[in-house]
Image (cartoon, rainbow, N blue to C red; front, top):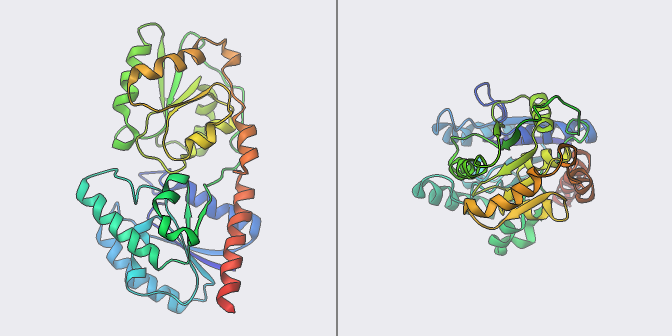
Length: 323
């Protein structure tokens, strides 16, 4: 099975974890299902013009090589579909930013309009959460919900050295990204510092090993985001059995349901976060833990299970196209 992956999210030297979940999903597919693959990366961060160039380059690539299927990650990465539709199946995974406002209004509206047009020409639409599926009711016959998985052999609970005199709280992402809502995070931390010694661990520009090490050092993860799809850092913290407090974004509600010492907050009022956070902070250090790893296994969100499901989608589409 030969697959062409097209994405505008993929690790680059100055942004080491940019689209790392996509890279890892592709690597897991190659490892467990023995597919042949090629990745076409549209570096829109470098130049927006790269999207226009991709239309011609992708057409040439598909015409010259024998691919069985194209899998697009992120809506506008499929811009080429508005100009030509390959005679092989096309799968697209939406990562939520295409449909929900993260930046300026004009950019959001243009991106959303393009994405909706691209979806019409896709054979299967993979979404990461129920909200995205509900917003695309007209495409429900093509939609399947399949969040990205993670390698449970890499992300696991480990013993680490930690300063027991302070509480280390993880901030999941880059402070500069508006949708990560570091402003709210800071307001919450300032309130907690009235009664506790709090330190912050920022999960930004880290290697995978550094992420695992830091996850095992924190007392809890605090997510204050306004927009998410199926945040990998939540699943990674769950795999390490860490307590989590998060806003109700993406599929976090599904992920944390039934997970002990973890709380979902339906508010952006910093005061509302304090009591749940203090419930965790007031626990003895060895009890600041969760059953998140068990929940991930129940949801079948390990990389092996997700690879199996993806491979089944590919196989069904390819077989159907040959009839």
